[in-house]
Image 1 (cartoon, one colour):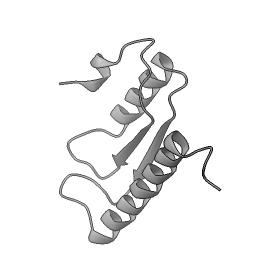
Image 2: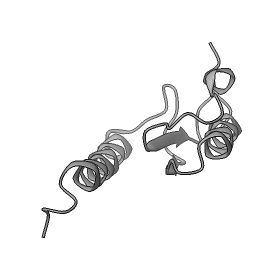
Image 3: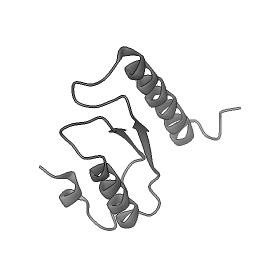
Length: 91
């Protein structure tokens, strides 16, 4: 299944954070960039962020890199949800 093929023009997609492992031996890093460009073109209002890491990939991820990745994901998730649901109420 190719997510690139499933993107449709004019659809409002939720904000995206794409994690790209540059040490991935199964998925080429440019695939995420291609997908991000397609979503950005199809839905210009959708924020698309790409997080890349040289120490992450299939079977090549250290615990430190994994912890850093999850801290970034949780920070992005908190900022995204705060902006969507509590934006006017947040200090």
